[in-house]
Image (tube, rainbow, N blue to C red; front, side, top):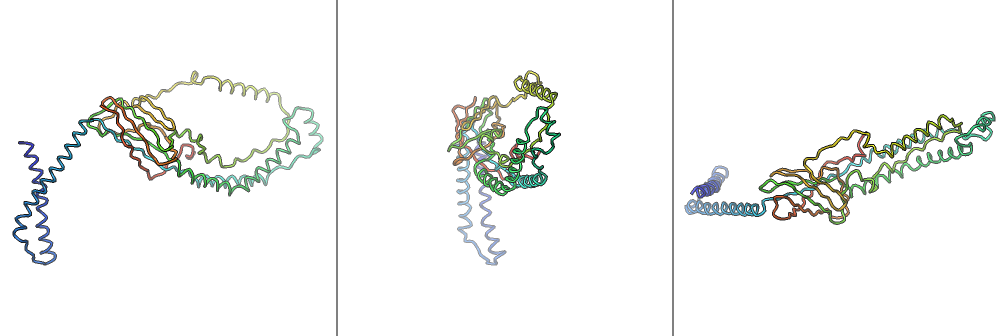
Length: 349
């Protein structure tokens, strides 16, 4: 009886809304349009009956669809929504081209102040002194280095425009292929869940990798900027103490490289109470979440990930959990962010 009362109340509320149509139309015709129109008696009597039947149908349809939805949830109480949020990358091409221009200016300044080549007999006294000791290089070697140094500076100056053009071409290519990506999962079921194992596979030759690995995919625009060469050092006497000091430092550095630094540095462990497992490869990503309550949403991997787009963006997802009666295959909703994101190696120092 109580359920019938609730059902009839819903019909009555819907019916009242439809009944307002006739008075509203009457006011429009007579008050605003000055038609002085009178509705026939059969409309005044028949419209409420039709409105009641239509309201009953609408409420029945809503309740029927709601029932089907609840039955489906009870049949599989766990359900998930997976999203992939793609963000375009800001490669800061304007900043990179300015660095190229600055490099050109620095090269021009160095070219203007480049030292002259040493003559073979530029100073007999110094020549004799140098010949009495072991030197780091000969005059001929220094002159060759100086000539190569000048040549490299000229090449940097002459190739400035080509360098900027190459950077812009690479940026155009990268913008179409590389995106920052994050995967989110939301519990849209009717019960909380635990021990959730999520597998995501890339389709159509697309790849996902960690941001730290971008150099493995030739995505380093700074490598296109020419480095100013170092001015060659003039010939000079080698001091034994310097040799010993250099050898000592080299030995220490070699020792520190070979030694396990973990044994001498304090270890800091960062507990990860939410994720029990994590694996990321080009074609396959896996994470195991400890729990997810109804309505909660979580970043699946909590990593800075990059998507290399080779075809249509599509993913296949498999979700297994403690409360699931079957393996779930939720469809991935792909969304594109509007704001651009910086890569870690393109941020300002």
